[in-house]
Image 1: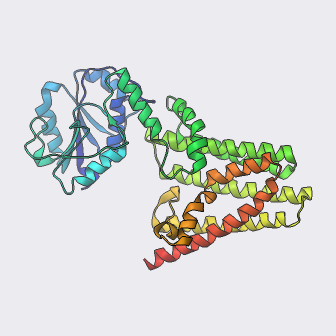
Image 2 (image 1 turned 60 degrees about the vertical axis):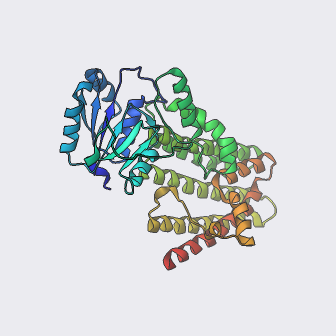
Image 3 (image 1 turned 120 degrees about the vertical axis):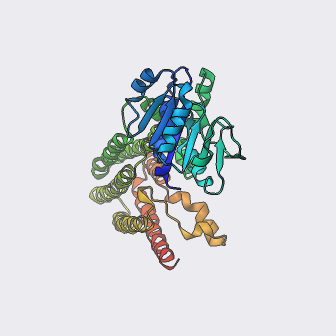
Length: 390
């Protein structure tokens, strides 16, 4: 199914326009439809003027058509005139995850009529566009932990907000992100959701903040290193805000992903190099610590180049989802790497960085980074080989 060939009909009853973390339900409905490729939407409402004014701020790039509820047939004929292959029918505005609409579209390739949220959202083939009287079996899409709910009361508002906030935790989160960083980043994201601040603005601010530890690492000494490590941990916490805000505001972009990854990698290498220089400048013993730092920087740069080339080849974009081979095996060595993989996650090593600084042992982090950067580089080379021979 081509997304551009999908239209939508949304019934908008007279109800309070509850603010669900920055957007009203009708705004969330339309933005989610837009993200799944829908371009023409008919809205059935008895308050067209008020609704049109309300949507003007946050909803654009749409062909929106307003009809009175009594003009259902006219709305249907207008949508059918667009020659869509299928049409979404919303019985009312919904706070719906984009993935729910995407899954409905995927299921429609095998089933003519797909419904979700107890019939609140239905995708019909154009030839079966009969929202008042379904005459063919409807396949129900399971929602699971995702959001797909109306908001008609303050109780529902609280429940939907809570669900949206819970869903900000990703399955790929490391232990530190899940149990420490998210506890601080989520409240920040919740506040920022009501502001005009965009995810890319947060990414830029966090990226700049991540470079500030360079000065303290180079200066050396317990307090400089502790301050630098503390700022780096703060940047790690805020690094989760841009992604959370992107999910809350439904403003994901490949540019934002690449910008975030660019700041993460370049700031990480710069902090390591400045620490190695600071350790050498301070004459910290043993002598091999600065050497380990330079090895870590060299291996880190090689890993960045290798991983960047990999994601370009595979088309994953800036989120750097790497399919390391040990995740697909059950050998003893593979299980060991699976259990220790958290050691290579950015959230862990930055937090470990802070712990070593508190203990006055930060220079020894250079040995840790040399080992991990070298291992990541070797594993990244293996991923290239697997892709090439697949």
